[in-house]
Amino acid sequence: MANKKRPETEKTSEVVCLGSRSLLEPEAKKLRVKGPGCSRRCDPECLWEGLDSLQVPPSCSGLQVPPSCSSIVRDLYQYRLDEAAWPLLHQRLQKSFLHSLASYRILQKAAPFDRRVTSLAWHPTHPSTLAVGSKGGDVMLWNFGIKEKPTFIKGIGAGGSITGLKFNLLNTNQFFASSIEGTTKLQDFEGNILRIFTCSDTCNIWFCSLDVSTKSRIVVTGDNMGNVILLNTDGKELWNLRMHKKKVTHVALNPCCDWLLATASVDQTVKIWDLRQVKGKDSFLYSLLHKHPINSACFSSDGSRLLTTDQKNEVRVYSASQWDFPVSMIPHPHRHFQHLTPIKATWHPRYNLIVVGRYPDPNFKSCAPYELRTIDIFDGNSGKMMCQLYDPQSSGIISVRFGPSNSDGRKQGFNLLYQKLVLYALCLCQYLPHLLMLIFLFLQLNEFNPLGDTLASAMGYHILIWSQKEVGPRRA
Image (tube, rainbow, N blue to C red):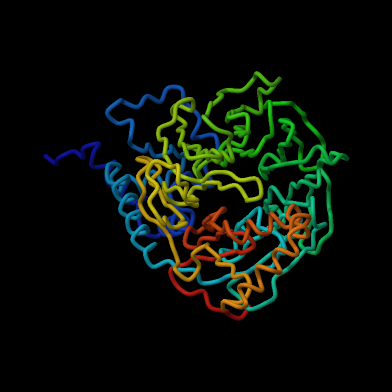
């Protein structure tokens, strides 16, 4: 009598058939390009559905829970790898990347502005192209992989500082920008202003940050009075509410659930909002109290974590499983100064790594003599420092020499200084910010491109490009 096929055998044969190379190969290529996280074909709300029922055992509180995904191909791919092996595989890939950082060096430099750099934004599809904004309102589009001259848009000068910069994903020849000029607007790289979303019409109110959701077609911006304004991309204002007591330094929409908004302020709080339920200043979901004013609050690429940077010496990580309690609090020196661009920690787009510039503080507990101004890489789970980037050719410190070096010249120099003491005193206020930029240079803004293999840094007036291998000029 012939043996009957067991149900398990039938199920196994079906899995093997679906898991054939012809079906998996195109999707595997997409996964390699996008990195770990939800597929773009997934419902962006998949990460948040059933979030309230997610229970992490105390013994596993330090483990990273992979986000759920509705893609059958991805589920099948993880089945073949074995679900238990996936975190280990990701850990090994991250370890390999950290090992490669040892060979990173500054390969490209630019100093196109007459004032310091205030904002950076990578092109969403061209990994060697980024937009840079300055304190004078200038914007530069720079493709450092080719030898062509960068596109440059001249700003208004004093009072035009670019505080937020985002590419328009529907047309990457356009960008959104918020500024101290008192506007939030959409313009192209030819210098044409296409739409003005907000305009304060007064020098006492300016806009400090912005974020954009292409899917929901909304623009959100915050000002120095604690107000947050939500608009659609046609320019219609949806609401304007005072959500903080003081200046809103940062606004961020969750990349997977664009109805989830994080706002940071110098009132020492970060607040999380559901845009579908905002009715007033007290309708926030969570209010995360910090010890010092906040520079930024940004979501990870998979939307499951929130990274905050204060204006003193702490970086925090929050998780979607418990927004109101930090899973990691990292001591780190990055104190704030009025005439310097604030330091803001960012996420690596592919790995659970934190990138932040170091500004050594003599009052910091672990400060060492002659401590270097490095870019620090931390593990997002443990808070442990994994790597420090430093290029001896660009240390971030500039030595300024005054007058001749011989003794007669030195004497003459002191006499001249004494004679012009009054003049220097009168000019001090005007040139103080520039003098400080010469003395206190450090890596303030640091952000990896979408592929995660190239890092852009802002250091005073300079833009630095870090990479493992040389990015030589090539033909367009």
